[in-house]
Image (cartoon, rainbow, N blue to C red; front, side, top):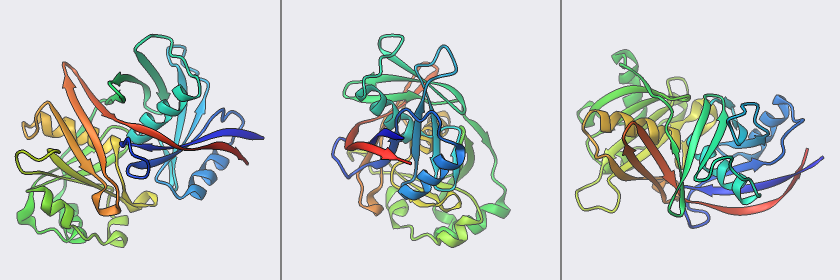
Length: 277
């Protein structure tokens, strides 16, 4: 059976500079094994599968797979899936807001100018054991003097978040992916100098799920923003850059409004067609 397919570049309005996402429309009838095999075959960080919602309050349901397994939630697949769903003629029940159903439940999305933005799921945090932190820093090649603080960040995916002294330190990291694979998924962030077009630089290392370095990561940026804003280390609204070391120029737009943190970015469809498997 052939199904409509869209490959979307997320967190960019310029094709080939964001994080690509494979979106399979009308995925009813595909088994878990078929979805996993397709995600592995694409060699992208994630593939998503659009399905009718089982929650009456949702507009569509999505299942999200990395090459190594299924995720209950992820940011760039949320934005890219919604972009593809709307472009294919999807109409939300309520004007001005789309409700996605996924493994963490309902996720709200809104239009933010030319961009889409999702409401970040609740964040669970935990302290980091120094017995883990030391080998992680060694695998990243980062000295302890460059680390400001660390925190476990869990909003579906679980990341070890590291706040480093500045963006240059983040960009200079030469990770040992083999060593990191057995330790944790690690997200690093550091501030740019005042006056720079982006306030933070982010990198994401996830060899444990088959993605050595993710180009642009919505779930990680959501967790980092909630953490940094909560501790007074970031303003309520800012732009983060991610992907420079892998040839991308992703931009993640953060806006903390009331009790909601919105994580936004542009998306552009690059490939449209059909898949048959």
